Image 1 (cartoon, rainbow, N blue to C red):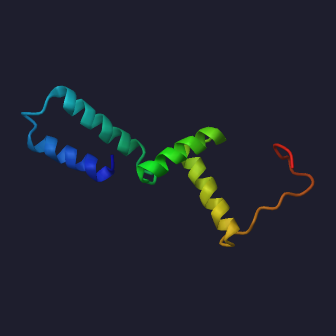
Image 2: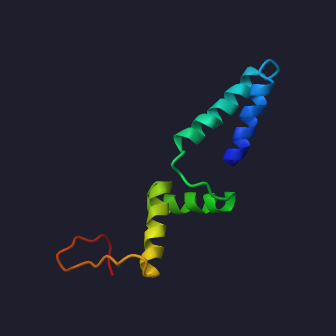
Image 3: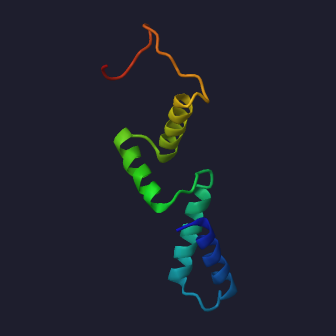
Length: 96
């Protein structure tokens, strides 16, 4: 559900507040609270969101950290940012 859908539901509920059930109002308000809690996040299409969730799970990272990592890597690959070099004294995870 997009933020515009949530806003439309909230506006509709406000217009018919006397007619809306308590359960429906709770659902709408919880969705709005979730949107507000994640307001700093970038909204993606459903298929991209699913891929991000899967990838974040594989990496053991949050969704936002995964997006930051993807964007940084893309920017380094396309020379918008300098590449981070690892010297001999740096600690690394894994093997080459």
